[in-house]
Amino acid sequence: MPKFAANLTMLFNEHDFLDRFQAAAQAGFKAVEYLFPYAYDKQQLADKLQQHGLTQVLHNLPAGDWDGGERGIAILPERVGEFQDGVGRAIEYATTLGCKQVNCLAGKLAEGADRELAHKTLVSNLQFAAAKLKDAGLRLLVEPINTFDIPGFYLNRTEQAAALLQDVGSDNLFIQYDVYHAQRMEGELANTLKKHLDKIAHIQIADNPGRNEPGTGEINYAWLFKYIDSIGYQGWIGGEYKPAGVTKDGLGWMTELTEVTA
Image 1 (cartoon, rainbow, N blue to C red):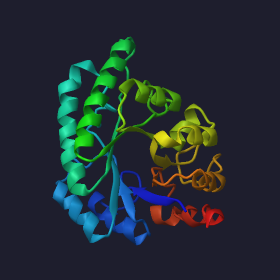
Image 2: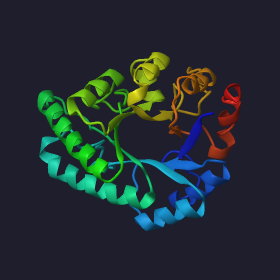
Image 3: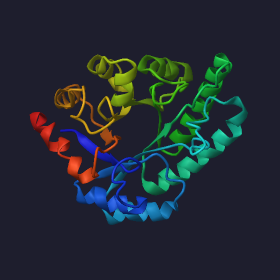
């Protein structure tokens, strides 16, 4: 049976962020994830998790000026020091929150930028982060993201991510597989999941088009959830989608699309 985590950045936006923990727990979630914890005191977030019996399963490394349009800094050679400082900050938060894995957003490659240098910078940064997180008992993830939603995003296909893992050469670097991004960029969801299962530490979901609830678009989630079970995936599945309306009114997919796996 799939284990679902609520992405509090995207779900329960009817509530202030700190109230979303309670809303997720009341809706039946046992785990949460979100993009970034850094705007809040880490102990305050840990208290929310404990108060509502929730497990924190994922957050991202600091990713630069998000409001200014940045989507990660790991490929930027002039930002290595900032990246390394962010690794330390992420470890502090993840340790306090009991979060066992942290995701790295590679960033957007500017037009005309040196792609080879960006790749070397990314490899070096991931080697640094993977080692530091391993020392702290945490796993490092990288996520391919589609270039329709984020034009210029450097890491955008599963095979590219798998090759990146080879280049980094760490046993503490894994893939975060987002079904929505993968569907937009490459399709072949089932075969890709099975091929790279040993490298996939986390899955996220949304339907396409629209990035709304599973079951609202072209992806056969009832079949896919059953398949994910059948190949032995044991991790969490994060609901990182845009609710079409009030979040709790659209949560029927969690039972309707998983009845076949019971």
